[in-house]
Image (cartoon, rainbow over all chains, first blue to last red; front, side, top):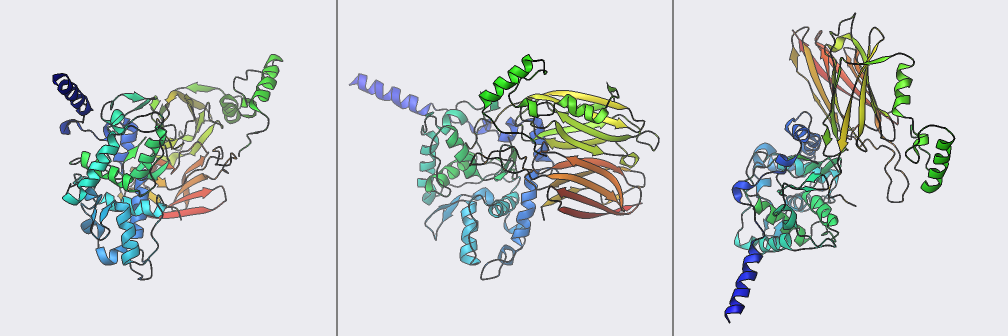
Length: 256
Length: 156
Length: 106
């Protein structure tokens, strides 16, 4: 009996030593990027992501759909109305009965309130509008809240983050909790905090969403990536934002 | 501008090139390199028979680059930029991209300061060279070696 | 019309050397990338950038595929008089996009 208890204890101990990063030890991907990459992000006159933010600003004021309304017609100046919004996403959508990320919320506005075609995932327009809205939260701390209705999503995201997957049989946690700061094929492994999305990734030579980046990671370990907008993708996004709670938003960030 | 010939299998090309090298046709280290103008040839196309001296030009590029898609580059030339003595143009070359040319910047006395910044692509670890043509017709240069690392997680 | 970002001072003293930063949205397709079918995606880049100051050329750049996507070019010019700076980008199809910025020189 005692042997069984000891074994159970040993298993419990090893299961929890997948080292979570202590809150004060959390660092943004910015800290792991080279000084040139950081300089690109810091200068709004030279940050290529700002081009998308400007495009988003134009879209914000563009009338769309059968209602012939723009975002501005309902929300006014984004500087005030959208301040802090991106920091709270993904969040629970009561009408849909499930969590949604910012891109999904934008598309819901388009179809419900503008009677317009929703933007395709990863389209230039959706990225621009998402970047523009998220940019209004730049500098504000990520404020993901785990309300009762978000608990299942948080638990799912947590499980997915720690689950080994793909032909390489790696979990997100193995690299980004246990081996951050070390090198993988010449690149420094960051902690994986979504502080600056949509992000201008040098590898893409364009702006891209968090879901696109997660799909890259999954392809990297040779796992089947989640479909855009899948519940797993949103759950993982939510867990990552929760894990990064308190860290400031940097949109549009520049990353290698 | 794309004059790369893509015909023939790599192995076949390698055999022909090695044979050519054996006949004294010059150093062909990379299959397909025969169709690419070398950096030296490109530079000669600019300066002709004129000499180019190292100095006055400062090429600032990171020694190790996180991603070859976007490499910050600044070239400045120590020069008063007057009507009588100024930088007429700055030309940038690379060693291992499919083409040796990167950019040519045309300045003049109205520039005030001979300094240009841009972002370039480097396909591999290689040398980058900047050559400035001054108003007196002389050429000055600077070069730098850049190590290019590849991204760990890509889409393919 | 590609998205453009131009940064320069609106006012300057006569003779002051000012820095101008320009950024334009463009993929700068090199012509060397292979598409899904294995054939190269055709080259499509901005190959020329010109800045004129009240009609006179003060800076010109010839660009090649080695220039990164969303070309960033920063350079200097002397604030000689009040007027207009015109920035033109020309692509491989011969299309030119021009942006005008005013400057006041005291």
